[in-house]
Length: 197
Image 1 (cartoon, rainbow, N blue to C red):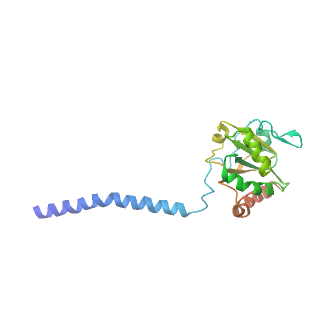
Image 2 (cartoon, helix red, strand yellow):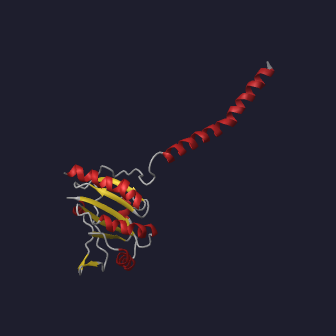
Image 3 (cartoon, one colour):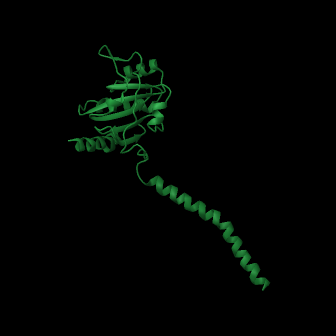
């Protein structure tokens, strides 16, 4: 009887030793599955399908186009047409890479591109736009980052596609690239444009 109880205790201890390893392997398998399941730049956003945050921001001090000040952001400006809302900063290296692609996207007169200049110095922001081009019909200065928090910004750059009624239709985390412009962002814009017609 003693031999049986010590054998039972030994197998019970083995399970206790193996249990943390089995839990770890299960979590690791779930992590790897989720990592490979889809586009990492398309992080879920609580804003998808909801009205865009009511963003009221002043323009970048001293930023002009054709001799007129470039306006800041007003909540009403995010409605009435398809809007591409881009979060950018002069200190953001990937923003430099996506700038020419935003300029190309701005040629599409069916959409309006607006910007949120995130935690930036106005002088540096103006210098950035003078060097890389200004695709923005309006851009608000979010010097403290509060609007970025309302938009659920993970980092800079990020781009949102807004429907004409002001709801968020799509969110791209990370820079616009030549690849995701044609395979992800333009199709998201076309989908919203098709719904609006």
